[in-house]
Amino acid sequence: MSRVKLSEKIKICRKKIGLTQEALARKADISYNTIIKLETGGIKDPRISTLSKVAKALEVSVDDLITED
Image 1: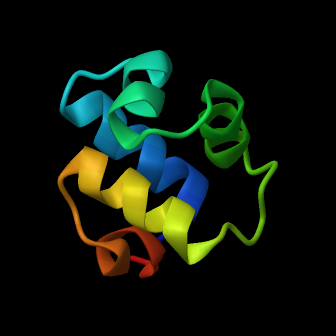
Image 2: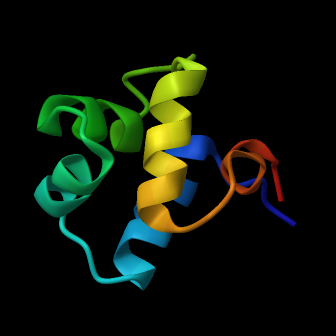
């Protein structure tokens, strides 16, 4: 079984609830560039505050995002 990276999980969760990157950025109250970097792996070790905002916007827990499948 392949391990799903944080960047892929964010993208999968975002698409599952029908949000664009821009909409997720607005909902999470973080910059659009940050969302792009998170989804492309440009940010390897995001701040917990950023992860918390993204998780809340995606309606999942931080643990769901950071736990490898």
